[in-house]
Length: 296
Ligand code: RIB
Image (tube, rainbow, N blue to C red; front, side, top):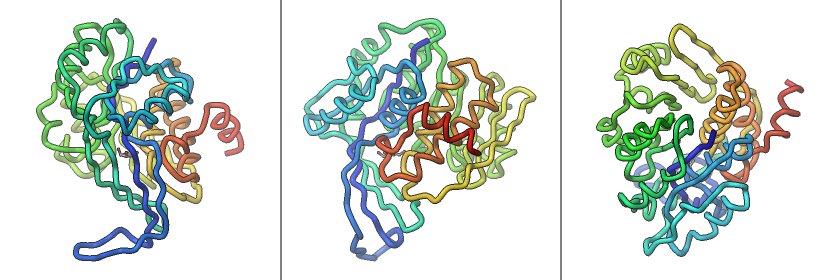
């Protein structure tokens, strides 16, 4: 069972700040770092470090070849990562003293997928394989229909949320992995329990995984409801925590583990990730998560 991650690759420009800049404020930053990122890239790295067989399809410009190389060196198949004549996507990220972030995204090359590149990306996949997508690329609708025709399962992390998501054939999605803001936008509800119930009503076949920041996560499917608290740690940088959670949750599901075990692995991996700066580079390997979790 292979995973095709049709996802973004970004250069993360990360600024350490005392607080997130307010309207009209000029804020001098504490420090600056350039990291590998993008929800797509981070999730591919997380899946791979969690033991899944991962193929990434995406686009970078000449300034982003190092992102493709990083993915390849991390063990991800990058045959379908194209280098095109566009600027690589980038994110301007403010990380405050509590480790919380605030992100401005420029999609750049991530929004340059064509009909041909999408067909090519799907060529080697079929029945039972998993298509994973976030909302930092174009072409989600086309990929969902084409993947379903091939009998693939579909996982969607609808992040960042915007109106184009409301036009997608969500009934094709097998796994929704989303936070409260995204859940509220897709369900029209604001309370976690009501969000998952509303989503299950609309998409009864789906696994719903709602992440709730410090309140942990909530899983719902059929009659099953599972709450997973966070593992408490001192956060340095929360960027990429959701991506780590997504990658670890799905890798565990692909191994055939039950939802409770998948949530626990995902929560542990995300907890380790936030204790280190950066996104992809902070994602732990499976051995580390396994040894850490037995101490909890
Ligand atoms: O989820 C974190 C990611 O969001 C960052 O790496 C940044 O690139 C944005 O896409």
